[in-house]
Picture (cartoon, rainbow, N blue to C red):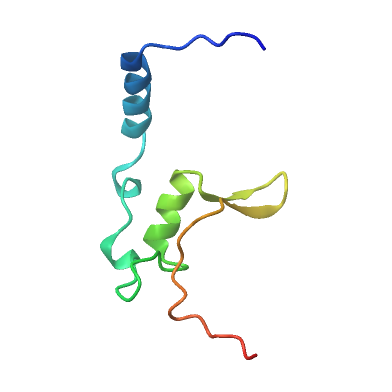
Length: 86
């Protein structure tokens, strides 16, 4: 296996800071009203939540695949979802 070069921690941190600075202000944090008060999970179809997820590439439309891509593990609220009979 070829050896990988590691960059100094300062350079890695500087790169992370630059990436954070490129995120628009309204995409940095989930809005307070985008979190369910009953279970502390993300509300589905909330405009602010969807914007943050899209900016962070956690949920977006992929035109090549012609479908929505959702990264696994997003903690969505199920409080208001109708339960299946059975």
